[in-house]
Image (cartoon, rainbow, N blue to C red; front, side):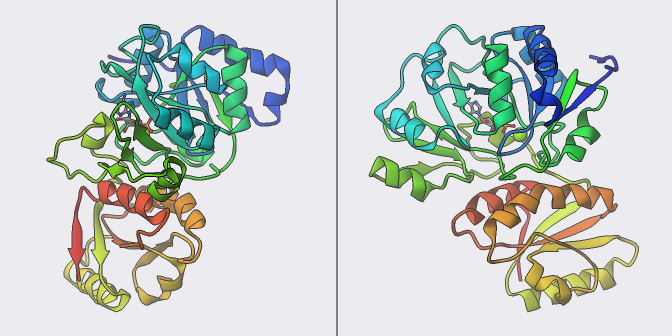
Length: 348
Ligand code: AMP
Ligand code: MG
């Protein structure tokens, strides 16, 4: 289907203080139009979750496969009960511990939410964001807002306003500039429809944080490989991929430097770059994009999608990414990097 060019309105955080602008946003959402807005995780491309037309428009505009369900955003905890059959004890505990915040919970849906929004599933993913603009537009529109990450399907998620401009200028009605995303990684996704909750996507809220609230161990099914069975439809698609070939290099920095040097000699016609921690940027002779300091996982997470997008801006053919430590937030970062590489990991 060919989508026509739209005159996109850009609003700043300052603009959103004016009631007239906030009304523009809620009118657009109530008319099943698309609004790109900031959240604390990444930017979202939002629409009325109750409208099959609006949900279909999200899929068309992102180029997202129609079986990859959307996360529904709400502004008040008690609103969750409007859209679900029931909540397990674990779900209630997690809602109270982490909402508002970067945690998405999967429930059995009721009939209020159309199947178009859930990619045909009888379950629904719900999150209560803590970003003020996100909550404001949900409250103003008085609607649940379906909002996947605001990137064209397959591309890295958007963590800066320039990313959403690249992907959606002329394709959505309104874009709200909220500056750099606070966290920079998408939410943790937990299935609470099972007896013991399951992590489907790691994020800022880690397994250890969840287990300390629940008081028991849970399982993680987020690392299923490309051919494995998946519980979360989004996990089976290529994601976060720059145009160049991406490889994760696992080993000492000296061995990685030797491997990259060798590649530079073997491929003099190719543009090569490394993504690594700032402590190692002088170990390489090719172009290098720093993720930030080894000692600051929040900074690294915040830089991750920008670094992947920079590879396309720099016109890089071969991208070597240093395997980062998987403790804490590093586990979620590696989950995204492994997908960006198409599961291509080289041990050196
Ligand atoms: P995004 O909105 O782009 O961050 O992606 C949403 C993620 O949540 C995808 O990986 C989806 O597959 C996952 N998701 C959404 N709804 C469900 C659901 N009902 N069951 C399992 N996974 C879901
Ligand atoms: Mg996404």
